[in-house]
Image (cartoon, rainbow, N blue to C red; front, side, top):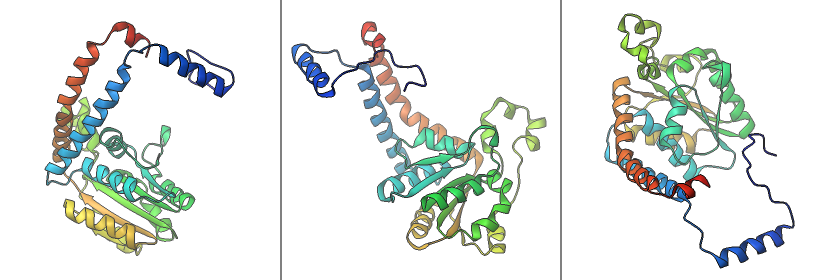
Length: 272
């Protein structure tokens, strides 16, 4: 099977005989170092730099929340546990700053941010345990799912990143056009989800510091047998500053390894 049509060489034969022949060939010659090994090393070093940057800052940020969730779930996670991510910034935080993640599920395509909470409920029922990382707008778009969430019989920890609007749009060129950007693109609001959760008899907690989130997330995983909501109030500008600082922390590592790759043999690069 090669649905992407990416196979350039195909070997067919007895597995033991094929591996034996390859081993014999490897003993006879020294192969050039694959530049991809340098990329793997760069990735490891970038991850170390990110880890140090996260540990050095006392500020709670959206990227740190995503990173901490992945750290805990990959270290202490159960086999049946999944991480469901909303679209927009949450999935981008996972992709950009989290090199090691549990099984991640998400909605894509034309679905946009509609139905995120409903889909996460289905993921929790199918897996047995689920953590949902969701933005405030996606949560508001599926607020009626709180009724179904209240009846969910398995653990579903909903982590809401509440930056009071569409933070992702600040990264687009439209943000420079202040006359139309607000309220048509960033859709600002002054809402939180405490009263909503109280109306549906759902456990809810605010976590505005790293220590508060670590404690709330640990308690939810250890104690909650059903649904619970952890709301993380964040600031859009502070979030952009945090992402810029994290990218800067890995910039030097990237530049060092980029230089070493450019010095690699063109012939070697063409065979990778």
